[in-house]
Length: 392
Image (cartoon, rainbow, N blue to C red):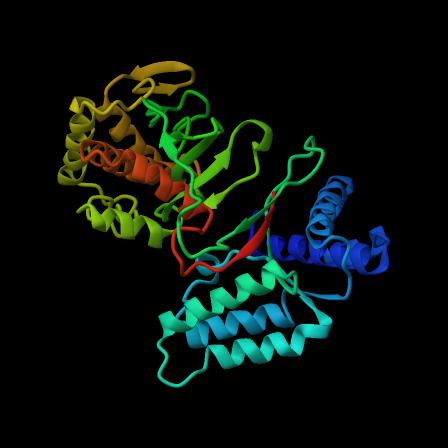
């Protein structure tokens, strides 16, 4: 939905104002009121907010009397408790709620109860977190305290869906998620679609739920303007819900699973011993990636590399990986495009992720991996994840 934290804050506060006005007053806020909160508010966003409010009204069954919180009120109160008393270091990994609704008549009781439950003598952080989550599940089910995660809603989608997440500590209701065979793509075509750039910057893959729904995933640097940035994995449903991202997969979920089968998540481009600073490439660095490419090509695990080639001015000038590598180094060194270095390092880490996929396959763990990706994106990979109402 958003391109920066500032834009995200504006959009989510727009949701907060719209929800409060419609649910509590029965009228939509004026365009003037909305633009004060979100300066890019337009007809498309009005339609999104209408779908969000209809979904929430459906969940609360027409109830009123709520306070709506984001930057002040009960939401930052809960976040501070989670940080100070429950060992939470990253709010979104624990609970991706964007706004919180609380019954005004119960607010003080809720705050006092949370404070008391997470401040008992002798309790460690993990125990406090489990207790906090359990209480939040109860109050969410009773529609007293409602943390809401807002996802993008396609314009052509007539109404938003709602889904309760992390309402149980066990995994008995989880569905099977399988990676689709032969769906791993790591396109190594350079300069065909745009001069000096890889045609895509990611490693792509597809998953399928047991109901047949398909989900596209990608592992890439999500800010190509940075030459050496962190590669993250992101999931987006296909079909009816295309564009409504599940979210980025928690690194905690990834690390826990990979460690359990003797593997390690690829290092970031900034810390990788064989990705030097721009202009610092040596033959040893290059040979590492040549060897990795040859290893992946020889693997029985299928990876679609596309056309391994270099194009300049619509003319193919190279068709080997070594030439792709050399030209990528030349382009980022000469700063041919502000995104050339970011796409290049993203593609290299994508190769390491391709090796991880191959190793997981050889261990017979691809189905388990599919679940980790899916529930890691939904922030439902552990009993330590907080409950929330997702609107998408």
